[in-house]
Image 1 (cartoon, rainbow, N blue to C red):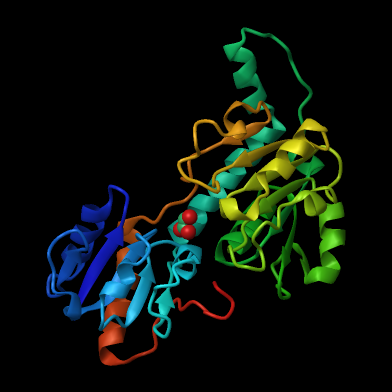
Image 2: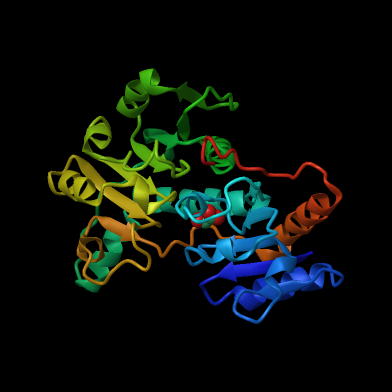
Amino acid sequence: MAIVVIRQDNKIDVWKNALQKADSSIKVYSYLESHPKDEITMAVIWKHPTGTLANYPNLKCIASAGAGVDYIFEDNTRPKNIPITRIVDTFLAGDMSEHILSVLLAYLKNLNIYKLDQVAHVWEPKSYLRIKDVTVGILGLGELGALTASDLTRFGFKVQGWSRSKKNIEGVRTFFGADEQQEFLKTTNVLVCLLPLTTATEGILNKELLSQLPKNAYVINVARGGHLVDEDLIDLLDSVHLSGACLDVYHTEPLPKTHPFWDHKRVHMTPHYASVSDTNSVIPQIIENYKRLNSGEKLQNLVDSDKGY
Ligand code: GLV
């Protein structure tokens, strides 16, 4: 019984060492070092190279090191009949909520436009909005969406949310299902996408949906690049139906240097870092699941494979 850490960024040793430090009795390997593949029962992964999960004949659990699991379902060579878990963490949710609050305030007070003015040495005061002037609409009321929604109400924003099934969040107007989507969009000034990426939500931020927002609406995508149809967003920004967009996620990451988002004046970008798993905070839940796996108990934070999240 052992854990393998599989990820392609530069955090592989950080994760391996943190798991090892949390419980020195557990054997933890990086997938890059030589290791006994048949001993591995849990893979702790983040955007693993496709095919690597198929190397472990005795794998019993795939643990995503982040909240999202879309990249796991995209790998058709993964073992299909074992549980997948994801991270549910107060810092991960809180960091996302803080990021969205920062983006909203920068939007209301024109901070991104002033930065461009500064670079161009332009002095041009602009009228600003107040928190009470906008209705924020959150697509997706899972762990991150629900916390963001209630945090924003405490700052005085009017907040509404749309989800696949009915949700109740104090102070938040909630909509659900296809029938209520139009009304939700019509009354949203700033749309925040926090949906999981599944076959049902891929490309959901397209011309048809975004055109239903009122003129001058602003779009924030902090979920996955696959939710957005990039050309449709650019068309709606250029035709001034949308006033701007702030993106943290892209179809290809890092975003290719030639992508039109880089030079678009009304696209504001961050490099998929709105909210990242903090090992200190999330390792205990992975270790707990590893122990449960070994003792045959039900795992925490299980993903529903039929829903894909
Ligand atoms: C980040 O994108 C995550 O899914 O945790």
